[in-house]
Length: 102
Image (tube, rainbow, N blue to C red; front, side, top):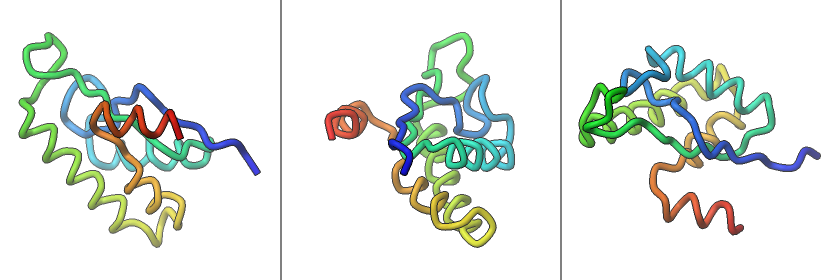
């Protein structure tokens, strides 16, 4: 069994910054992550006020929710691992620290 990996810097959220440009691209990124052995993703979008940020905090939260929902909806296509990953996508520092410390 592979040692679980945690991606601590990822721009998987769609339409938020200079990362994924669409929900489909985000789903492809999630698929690649799972197939690469990644079990957790810490979303690290550029934040409001950054030259590379396209969205505000409410937009980022909505993109996070939309991505989790899209991954759950495509569970049949991507398999159980991707569904599990959707619940492990982390979006705050406390969760990330707990994940790293576990």
